[in-house]
Amino acid sequence: MLSPGDDSNDGTQQRWRGERHGFPEKGPGSIASIGRRTFAILVDFLLAAGVAGLFTMPDLPKNWSLLAWFVITTVAVAFFGFTPGHALFGLRVARIDGKAFVHLPRALLRTVLIFPLIPALVWDSDGRCLHDKAAGTVVIKVR
Image 1 (cartoon, rainbow, N blue to C red):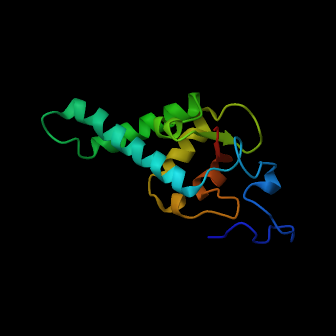
Image 2: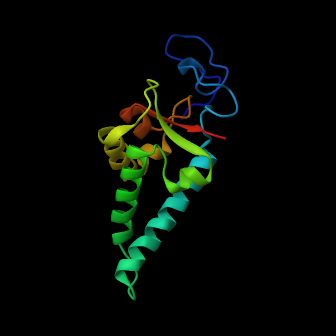
């Protein structure tokens, strides 16, 4: 795991996360912190457990909550660019190439790679986790 200020691939010093990709240092459009992202995914996990619980009552949802999380995350990111947790914490998934929509293939790849959690726990000096790098996305602040 690298931190801001580490050397980039071209040998120049990066002053803030996302600088080399044209993202601002602070405010809307800047790279989201790992803390905000963590809280957002926890909200999504709780929401998925609640949705799955509606279908499994009176039993606990068990692994059905994983399926609910997978569907909610994939569909929400593909069509809206954010999950309910992202919305709550003022975050959005954006394409690194600047195009407007994430679309289903990228959202699906990103969600599949989050599933084992390891890619979400390893990030670069831009604050992009492995699943975001593979999907060509980045999580930014919207407020």
